[in-house]
Image (cartoon, each protein chain N blue to C red):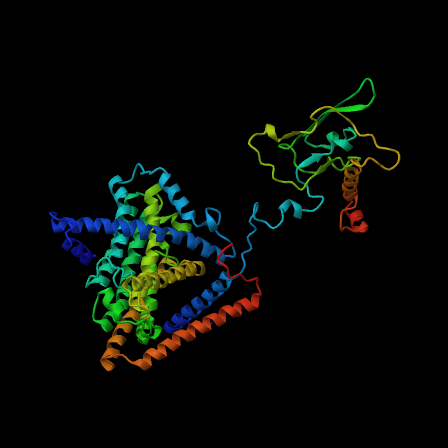
Length: 188
Length: 395
């Protein structure tokens, strides 16, 4: 360290300010790191998130079996499902499938027991709204017949992609992407 | 300005009106033109430019949403402040509290009377211009003390007292570092000081002798301190004093204080470029008076605004000094050095009454060498970090 003399102080002041200005000037020509969310990103932020990102819940009613596993699993009861049996066809009919997103804590426990992967998280996370009521997602607009798993492979071209996606979603809970089986055992 | 009005009177435009009334009306009109057309815009745009420059130094983007590249941000901010309620605290001294911003603005706006924008474009070329400028800037202290006292708030009071102590102290090195120029030129008029310089850098007074070179930096430092500018912004040190003397102000009056703060940057730039950097001097390229004056105005504006940018850059670089450090810097360092400077310049003028071309060339080379070493250091820091570079000011 320079001895603190009168001239030494002046010299060190000038030298340090000079080099400080050089450092900040070098920062002046660097590219900003700012990500201009939401409207000026190169790709939508939602598209950069992983497959199993726990965003807002969604239900594919086409492959929902109406088993109520998600309703039972939900620790805060934000899922409400009503179903009844159609007296003529004896088929299960879903009359209500509500998820209160204001209550949901995004734990993912509902999508784990789902046999078809019908209820799943999406990468969508922009859920701001003006009232609590509008945060209740009502998936059943009019009563629908519950999905009945086939013995063989699914052949309906409209349902097949949904089911494939759902099963992949469920499988990845047991075997997360990138995790080795040994590591999965250890954590279990 | 007076000659312009005289020519209008001679042409019979104001027949039957007393000359004094014409002069008074002319002053009001010119004042409005300068304030509305120049000062408000420069101060406002400076707030926006400062935020953008500062952001880029922080590797951020800065305001870029209001208008193209955020250029209208300052208008939005100003309108928002004008719309806000003008609150006078119950325990404050209401008359002084209301008056203070106007005193501060007065001390700032009247400096534009002598600022030489070009060889013809100056409101009044006073023969005591430099003295006048240092005198009216002292009026700002009165306003700040008024604001601090009338707010009846300890933060405001400490801010006001600090500001007064700071400005009064730094007036001395600022004045003393103007004197070498006055010694060389033998005049206090801005126009004659500029006329004795040339357009080429080696004829500027900053490179006239080693003493003027040092005086330039002392003047710039003291001017920053007088403008309550980082690193000397103790009167409004957020971490200690909330906002100093502006703590209790809101709405339009708050706006006035910040108009002065940012407008002062331009005055600082104009002062140092007129005294030390050749002012509006341009190469003799044209005989057309209008074109020449436009060129001169642009040159002067660019030179002045460069120093505004430098003060933003300093603000992004240096931390705020402590009160004792502030006073140490002034009384133990700047004041003695500027005295030595003044005596040195006087001695030099006795030895070399007409200046020395060799000395000028040597000082110009020294300046160029410092600049070159500076860019060498910048490149050194960039090489070490290997960042992604961008030279576009847009985002």
